[in-house]
Amino acid sequence: MNPANGVLHVRCAPALTEEGYREVLELLREFSPTVQALPPRAALVHVRGARRYFGADACRIAELVRVRAIARLGTDVRIGVAGTWAVAATASARVPGPGGVLAVPEGGVGAFLGPLPVEALHGIGPRQAEALRGYGLHTVGAVAAVSPGTVERILGRRAGRLAAERARGIDPRPVTPKDLPASAAVRSGFTRHELDGPHARAVLLGLVVRLGAVLRGRRQAARSLSLTLQFAGGTRWERTRRLTEASAHDEDLRAAAYRLLDAAGLQRARLTGMVLRAEDLTGAERVSRQISLDPVREARLTVEAAVDRANARFGPGTVRPAATFHKAA
Image (cartoon, rainbow, N blue to C red; front, side, top):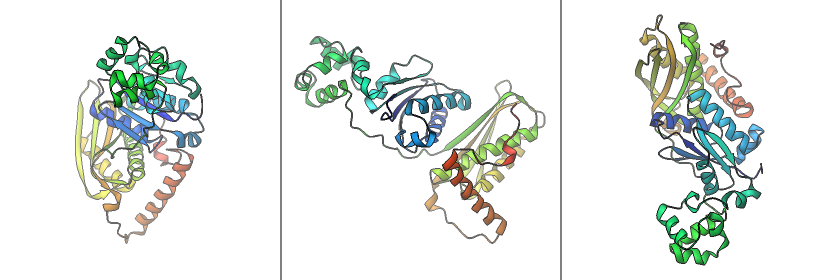
């Protein structure tokens, strides 16, 4: 795998809900801040800067993305890895369902694209493919072999130029982060039906820590918090609580999350999963930062900032509350 390849094109399952799609986008942002959502069910990720951080090439990072998507979210993804948007998107479309990774090394773009039918090239529609086949250009390699001017005469100037470039693996479009979504969510499942209240509370604390890190990393704050509990048999319980003021701090999120969990009155309910969602988000710069007269709170915020720096350096979740190191179910 050539280390120059740094673009991941991620395709989610067509049946994935909008909530699930948002969760995949949040997962991708754990690997790189440069994530471009491609609704309704795809995304681009630029991971060249993340390779050094994770000590892995782009192909290995793609494998990690897939493993975490399956383990955390219960959904598989198809990922194409290449040096450009178009080649990565073409590769992800060639991955058979339900998921997998297909990497195209920089020196192997021609060998990968050449044998493909023209309609397999990213950006080529059915009518364009039909027009190219009408002139005997049935494969991407055939399109790349003729002059760009010939392709332009068949498809028109702009469409022909793009088709000729992409057939050669050329695509200068950058991966551009889109606006942050209006919500952020984290989830956890249980390998068995959970009856232990303290264990459920510890899992919720872990979600709070993860959600707070996501918000602070995106420089956002939540005005409300929503908790969804999933039970054996498929039933669900969901409540939302408004925060006193917008916040991304673990202390504030934890207090609201615990109140939501207490309101559920679990007792001996058979819990199978939980989702914690921050809603009605605002930019952190819009939240007034007042100096607290509570020295304990100020100390916690100082520790929180130090933990964020440590996790940014050594990896998400490296430093977290001891209570979240619960025994796996």
